Image (cartoon, rainbow, N blue to C red; front, side, top):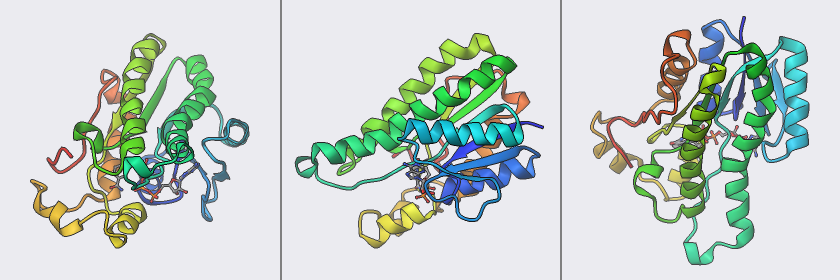
Length: 232
Ligand code: NAD
């Protein structure tokens, strides 16, 4: 039985990935600031290397080597570029980019040892065209796409695939909060989405389930948009 870690698995997209991977027969540990009452939940801030190592170590001890990692923890911030402080910038980069760095480094030794591994990074469709008032977020998520491609080249020979899934508009607490504050117009977004609906967390979970499967072993370094045909 394979063991996966899903960061951000306490809410939204990450939570749907947890449900799906469990339904597919994996052991899944949740690494989140708020893992809720998940029986395999580990509290950790992805920006804190010591906390990540402790959580990964505890999950490994309980379920065995970690050979699947889905990085879904993320933090949005909407602010005009001229109003962003360097602390704002650093926090958004820290969670969305450096968090991926820490989690990948923490699990890679298990994957290398196993000669098999799957990493999926949840980036964002905003990386396709940019997004006003979200510059640090888009910068971080774009860097995650670049990191994905580089790691795919570096670890392909070790049997490890690394892909990114940039979601479009997905109905999660993060999106609803942004909509309530007027930063996202849900109805307008649906109208400009070719399939004419908002995405479900399960849409992203399905892509993750495929990318971590045995049969996706020839797919690596790819940025698989799941966005209803809408590229921004
Ligand atoms: P969400 O807010 O519902 O869930 C995010 C989870 O990440 C939460 O459980 C939160 O506690 C956790 N988290 C945040 N900071 C953390 C940290 N420092 N350490 C550990 N856990 C942390 O959001 P979501 O919409 O499910 O987003 C999941 C991912 O998808 C994020 O990376 C987000 O940027 C990305 N995304 C979402 C959308 C969308 O429309 N919902 C679109 C594009 C990209």
